[in-house]
Amino acid sequence: MYPLGPLPADVRAGMVAGIASDTRAPMTARSRTPAPTELPPDTVIAGGNLCLRPPRAEEAELYAAWWSCPEAQWGFCSDARTAADIRSALPELEAEARDAGHWTEFVLEQDGCPVGSLWFSLWDLETRTCDLNILIGEPALRGQGLARRAIRLLCAWAFRHADLEKIRLCPREDHFPAIRCYRAAGAHLGGRCPDAVHWRGETVFFRELYFLRTDFRAESLAPA
Image (cartoon, rainbow, N blue to C red; front, side):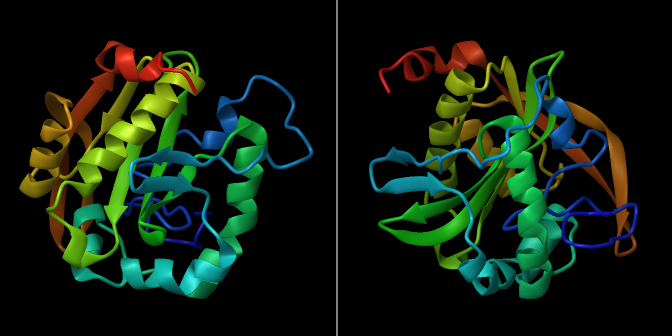
């Protein structure tokens, strides 16, 4: 079952404020140690006027509004999410945070206001890789460099704290604004992803872009 309830098999899986890019490897499988009984402290990642922090149940209506946007649904090949779905998914997200020892989904704030979501998926302990997904929930803020800055902020933290070697971003290959954004953030352009999805009558392919640990050497080694 998907974290936000059942979805068709060819639709990408849902997180809470976000949408994971795939569910072939559940994030709960990435921990090599017994899961702690307490939630890890809230991770707050700050940079300039941006802040990344865990999602909150009281903001479920806001997250649902983000996913009611047709542009967001098209970009992620996803249906809308209800606030009830999102609230019901929070316990699973918290369980994943306990298992990993840190949060894997973050709400993006700009000047103290929540404006979007970033989340990890497909975490592979052996290859030390994962996927990163981002949604700027407020349409008026898209195309202004916000996603690029948020990606750099979260990747610098992840390479430093999560022992990763590679972080992938895999937008649909015809989502040219997303590809331009990720390239502007410094991502390398890879090939077409091997899997496609069938969504609302179309076959959708995805393009891999990626960061390497060495791309963030200065940021990853900066003092906390």
